[in-house]
Length: 339
Image (cartoon, rainbow, N blue to C red; front, top):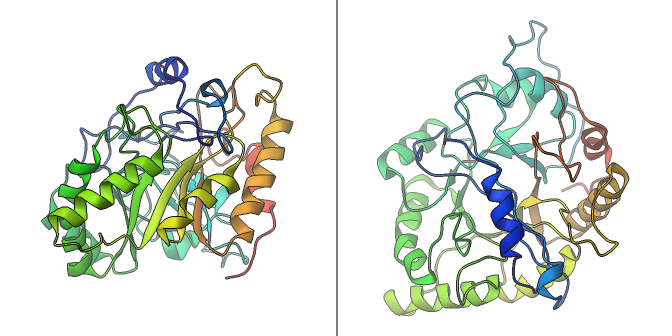
């Protein structure tokens, strides 16, 4: 997962430090593929120094907190909540589901299937949907189609995680264009909508700006497919700084509704605006969620993340198993717009 700020290049030094501090192994069929981390940007055209780096959250084969037995009490119909609101995290423990379910409607884990610890009746029990991701081009199409047919409630497929980040899926526009017909074939066979690519400010030479990457990707696809546009039902975006609304406005040119599949504010430059307290992150969460809820072009959004071990930006929604942090309590309580 990666994320964060406006028209600026990512701070490679900070990015390198963050990436070196994180690691893991995949849970899905893409077991060799790392999950994503947040990149940067800022609000119109900030200097490179104002661009935060990207965290890395990799799903693991075991839950982040010790697993517990599912509650023996019958499921309770959840209260009304935002259909848009989700979390980017490898959820596994039933207690964590129970803690989040009153205010979170969906999650994903950067893999093509949920963690093996997830209760089979998660939708009925918690009122939460899971959405798979094809992180790059490393997947088995027959297996993905079989999984989607066995789970017809899954209507969306996330694809291509941060292609212009060399530490993430690391795909040039031409490479992504070559992969895209495979995603389209899965969508045609199963009826799912394609959500992607998940773009952000990156580290790829000549393609740090997500708009530059997207323009080249579309051109490469058109050139290889008789001028036809790629199927993009929703455009994914990651952001970890101030200026979320301005970033989305830059992307309106593509005419697609958005899934913000990673967001928080990890602004770390020592410029007086750094996020270094819970109160500052709470203020940013309140503002960013309000932006997502108020915009009709934002279809889904997912906070990064459930738990973060070196949480210097106060971004975790969960503490111990089944326990919300103060930030988690705020996330569940924020106002929403009925869909």
